[in-house]
Structures are given as structure tokens and as C-alpha cells.
Length: 289
Image (cartoon, rainbow, N blue to C red; front, side):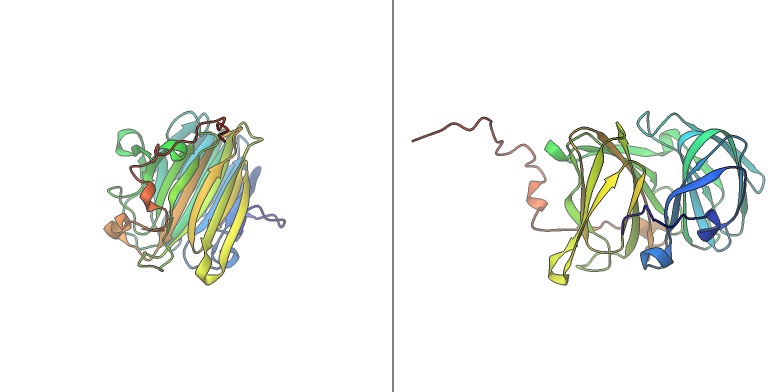
């Protein structure tokens, strides 16, 4: 499923939310639209002066700034979140557990992501920033990318796992392809991919596949779009003209520290680990008799 729907989403379709002011849902998914059990997600654009009130109910929520500035208040906690854009540096995340109410006050034009999943009220409201968020370089060759562990072990949550990834133009991410849909020995996790590109004319190509089950879905992912991963192995490529950013929200059967369980990789392609620069193609190819 590609996340940009022809039917406009309202924030109240996804969360127990009230909006005073001007806020638009750019793209979204929930269990009903995606055909899964856990993850609800939305990217929201809001003007200064807008207030968004959300009751978490039985879900834990994570809020990520993408651009702009806003204040978040929840049961005695008050945080200010700011970001120039997703390409200016690693992000931060505000975590709010079930059973709380949060208020988001937009102080300048803002784009933010919010997502949640059913959870127990185990972990406290907090703002996660800076050195507590691990960043690493993965892959190599044409699949070298930066991965930021926004909300992944040892950072605590019941079900939610968040990553954001920067992919240089013309490069791949998620290579070798991996799955986490409960098949081939993998854990069950649902996942959303929210995309941005610099410049905005760029796009990504995303594939969900498992040929033996007849699954082979390929999506074009333009700027500020969403793709869901309900099943299958998957990987993503950036068009040659733009750098690519994507934000992942995951949740499923893994709970608490089990969230560190790795996915399953497609064994046809794992040979490339440690061999990223082997067998280069030198152009132009020479002509021989």
C-alpha cells in the first residue's frame, strides 16, 4: 500500500485527537487501512498557533519533529522540539505512554510524525535526544547509508521501534533485503516508511516481495509519501538526482527488550556483506576480438 490516499485523513481517524487551528494529515496508515494489528501512523503539517490534543488511550505514542518548532506537554512534562529539516542532523523523539493526554502547540510552521501501538503503561513520558540516540553507518558500495536508532533497544518502549535513515542519491537501503513478518524464522513486526527527498523532485523505489507466495509489490515513493510493509522481504533505492530520508515506525509481537531481535535476511543476497567493492565494472568496457 502506498500511503498517499485519495481520501483525506483526519487526525481523529487515527488517534483520539482534537485540533484547534490549521493542521493537515499528509499521509497516514492504521490497522484498518493497512490490514494489520498494531501500528497507527501519520505525518502532519501544521501552522503556528495550532494546538493538537491527543488522548493516548491504550497506546504508547512517539512524536518526531521533521521540520519546524513546537511544544509538547503531557501530564506535568513539558518539552520543546525543534528541527531545521531531516537532512540537517539526527532527530529526537518524545515518548508518551498509554493512559496520558498530550498537548502539542505549534510555535512555527511544522511538519511532524506521530505513531503508536497498543501497549502497557510501563515506561515514563520522556524526550529522547542527543547522545542517547545511536547513529551508525551500514552497508557499503552503492548501499552505504546512515541509520539513527531513534527508539530501539536499549531505549525502552513496550512495542514501538523507530529508525530514521539517510541514503545518498542513487544508493540502496535495506540491502541485503530482510523480512520481519513471522515467516522464514523472522519476528512479526509491522512497518511504515515515510519518505522525504532533497531536492524534492526526487523519488524512491520500494519493493515488498516473497516470490514463492506470489508477493511482489513495487512502489514509487515521492517526497512526503508513505509506504507500508505488512509482509515480505523489502529494500529501497534512491533516484540518482536526490538524497533520500525515510522514517520507520515498527511494532508487533516483540515486547520490551525482545525488540532487539533481528530480522531475517534473504540468503540469496547476504553474500555481499564484506564484498561491497568486489568485481567492479569499469566503464567503458573494452572491445576484444
